[in-house]
Amino acid sequence: MTNNEKLDFILTRSSVRRFSSSLTPEETETLLRAAMSAPTAMDYQPWHFVVVNDNAVKDRLRSFLPYAKMINENCTGIVVCGDISLYEEVSKRDGEDNTLYWVEDCSAASENLLLAAHALGLGAVWTGIFPLESRISKLRETLSLPENIVPLNLILAGHPAASGRVKDKFNKSKIHYEKF
Ligand SMILES: Cc1cc2nc3c(=O)[nH]c(=O)nc-3n(C[C@H](O)[C@H](O)[C@H](O)COP(=O)(O)O)c2cc1C
Image (cartoon, rainbow, N blue to C red; front, side, top):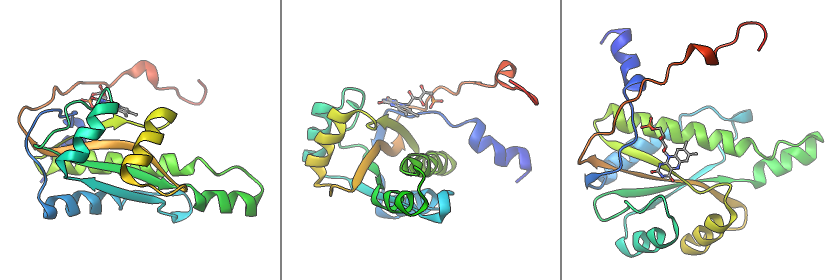
């Protein structure tokens, strides 16, 4: 595989919102392995992942997540969560506020997961939870999340029924050299 072909996995990814079947356990583990290879601040790896295959739980999620209505029996839900207690401790120790690093860490893991899905011919879409308090609290209740675990997003993943539209987002005006 050429270097350009490898880069294509990044350049041709797009959100997939229609699925024909959910992930197998092996596919789920492969995607989570990719997610957990992401970089994290101080290598704290603050993530937890709640895999949702139960259709009753999916129905419940659909009832309060307005932009994740496409979750159904043909896809797997993966809620990417962060353990906020790790950075609270380090913030106290270092006397500076590190508490939001979990968001960046879990976002990096989420993007790895989306890219891995695309590389394997699967499809996935990130749907938003954090920082919307009403969604966080309903998800907390639905999934029995402990106090220190905050959901960042709900990723839907599965075998694509329709491919997404790839957008060329390269924009030279967003690049600044030496000064903004
Ligand atoms: C923080 C965040 C929240 C998002 N929330 C949703 C969502 O709730 N529902 C949805 O269908 N897509 C959601 N998306 C996906 C974006 O709509 C999508 O990435 C964007 O339109 C660009 O399209 P692409 O991913 O195909 O390049 C979200 C993406 C991010 C990064």
